[in-house]
Length: 361
Image (cartoon, rainbow, N blue to C red; front, side, top):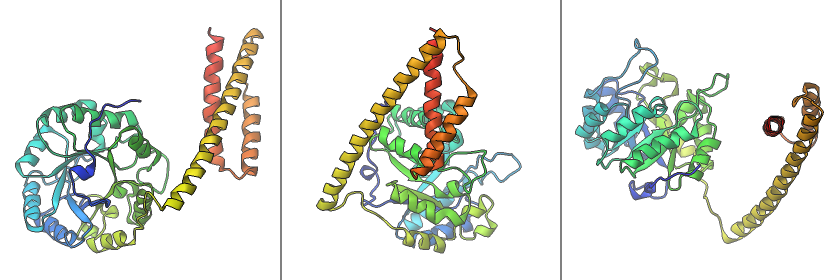
């Protein structure tokens, strides 16, 4: 999947000093007092560079607090003037954008629900044509990398080059410890496909609770994500939205102090050994792909044989026996059973497609 994104590296439009960008603030701006008191405490934490606050809240149902509206932007502007912190707000309509620009908001972000709708994204992008402001785009609710990249492309096409992505996890029907599954492979693939894109991880929305915030934040740092967006409230117990995932500023400071920051590159000796190990992996991967190619050739032979003898593509007994035997081999070799099962399912899916094509030609 190719991309045509012209994006400025984050250190070209925000002075990160080579450190992770930390964004914090309440899920929702609820009152002037709440917002100012939270922001004043956050300003005492040197790592926090940007304050975020929900002004318009896209709630699932209309009888829930949906934000204070434009008056909250004036509170943010006052906080910015007092503390020097940059400000960041979610926008979902062109009217939101106009109100933010009028109140000197520094950065806009697009929420997951909006990212999922290309019509909404295009409407926002058209409204931003000719405007020089950074835009951060959250991943869509469901794991659709093309949709995420497509949203970035739409903003880029109207001249926005100060772009970043926010990784807030993906909705799942499964019961898991997370509110939204991190699915780290997706933001990693985004960084591979889109050069210069900064990815800010949002542990608050991934976790949905305070207990997991430290470990998810650490994993984001270990995977070389470019920053964190963590929700903080002066008194989370009375928060009107997402109370269970917000931290008091003092607890945010503890979390940030406990993070271990690892270097992306090491000493010359380390790099030499790492290069050798990577060379070994390259060689193993080549062998692995060669073996898979040989397997698919055998699948083709079986497909032609089945066609000649009028045999169905799928035999369930054979599939069950194959899965059980391979899972046992994998377990004996010390491989994770879930990984082996996922690999076998992927290979079998491709095998079915190959044989089905043979049957229909």
